[in-house]
Length: 508
Image (cartoon, rainbow, N blue to C red; front, side):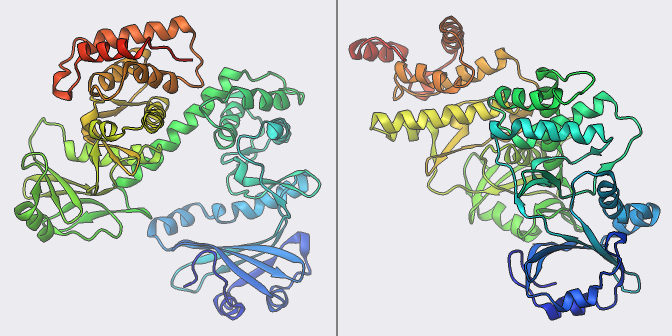
């Protein structure tokens, strides 16, 4: 199919594509005729279009329909469907079983299968449900979703991908399931699976900076629906955090596999991974190595908009280029801005990490020193504080969190030098150490008052007491005083003297 997502398509193209399919009507609609239905279509739009699946939105008169067409292009997909033939029609069977059990779900109309073609393919046709998705982070709908989750569990329905995008509220306010591919029907649903299921819903429905309010309302609906053993707030939030960690890991690992964004490189002289669309080969690496501009010695080079880091391959040494490639993707999926990673290569005894070369960039110190307006500077510090919060909220530990490792462009912050970044459970000591590293590497351009405000912005939502803030200030300054701050143009005597002249440092 040549159509792009969101574009209209021709009815004649559909007729040609599904002409040779063996089509079977649903037992719920035995008199349904696919050919007659297809001739009555007056609207067709491609909702999703990949090399493995197309989803069409179709209309006949006042009725809407969705057609999901899947192609078994990859050999591993064909093997999987050969070994597990029942999986192909799992969604079809689940939709019928849901309708028979009285669980609101979309209505299946027909299915079709192509067996004689070069690429096996099949489709499912369902009716469209008129309604709307529930808004994200809405406490008003949290209790309704909790009631719905309890309703599914009482019917022994375990949906492995239950999230707010897979159900919607119809015109009567009733929640209707849209995607039934990952539904299972255990005879007994253990409490562990129920909590696991609730964590998946929480992950997709509320923000994680302050989830307590939403989750309390959600559990009030779930536990109040005659559930045998109530689920506690801490259990539900921890289950959601486990789902989030799993989500981050699965998305990050795609940079080392063939996927929609990345591909493996296996050439005679060149091996590694690259982003699709990036076309550097061995000859380009040699040209950049010989003609590039040194940025940090000869091991970091800039050439034609690409920043290239290279290290010799050594045994028992950390592969810093591969670590940077993996961590760049791990930070990207967490919403932390980094220069766009382009490729990781192994070539002639060296390892290369290639990333976007930021134009018109400034180091953090130079950026803050250039801001003469106090209000602009405080807005920049607030943005930086919230950026650091994302690191700590998503368990990202930058062991060298100093200003020279932070670049600024157009008001956005970018983390560089990624081989020192780790993903781990952070304790309060590590977070305070990051704050101290940043405090010690920012010049006199930032006043003491703004340094105190920085932690005030950073701790927004946590609501620490006055004594807790003073304890953190004291620990940060004790660590700062042990560091060499002169290289960052930070002189505490001058900074304190300027603060005394300006007045006492007080923040609201």
